Image 1 (cartoon, rainbow, N blue to C red):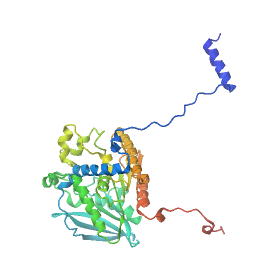
Image 2: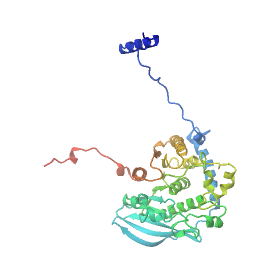
Image 3: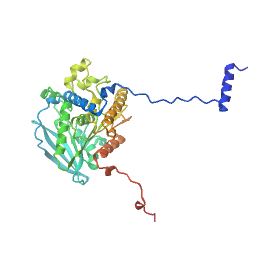
Image 4: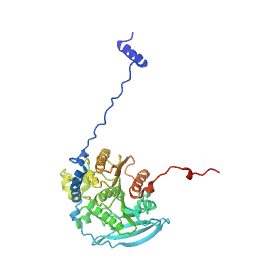
Length: 382
């Protein structure tokens, strides 16, 4: 004999089959508001006018973070060319140097396409933590996926790939990326302030070239170069479009935050170490630094499996809040982010997106225009 429960189930099934009752559906609802710790970016900011005032405060905090007040007086460029070659008949590549301090010169590779218009867009290409990073950016050694200067010159850009100040021609006796001697020379400055200042001087080099279209300058980089891109775009308003690939994590939500001010090798922010050891964070974080770029174009590329997955998920929330800033300033089309699972890399799809981002924002519309197939473009098969 069947139990009452079985009889009810049988009855419900028969009624459902007869269409007399319907399966339960999910209720319609509005999407919930996404709240995160990054919301402080627009706290008490409701209008574009509010943002303008808040931005000025953030810029002051940013310049103090990198200790910009401690930078030396900028010397004349004194641009020199040390070698020049033609690559594949497509572009000329020069090894150049220029003054960055009264007693210090930086080296860089400079590429200029041979077939170019009177004025061409230009890009500052920043390398990662590699002893000969500028040579890698030029495609002369190591990973060709990171040969940005070569890739971009073939796409019609004038490109400068400067050496990081503790690499290449300026590797200190202690080894690549050791900042000991830098802080002995500049105890009140920061390594971030130093490389940002030098990257801005690389922009000065581009400005000195009559064939560069100074209205269309870009910056891009991977890893340490991605961080450099972020800082440069925030620092130098001449950068119209920037793309940062796999830059390091921020100050908050970072269990290894003291690495930003470690006591050995490459020390980003030496003045912050005492505060970090006390559990104190700076009064500005990466979302506020990136926001200084608005409304100019900025693309953030990152991987969920590049370091701490939870931190990288926080990066996605950070990017959503940053998009609100670009929306507030009237240019949401100028901010984008791409999250992938390729780890700490710059694989084909990331490069393709970054280069397309540059094309979109630095080249004329005709460079990215697409057309329908019309009868005048067709030819019968014979």
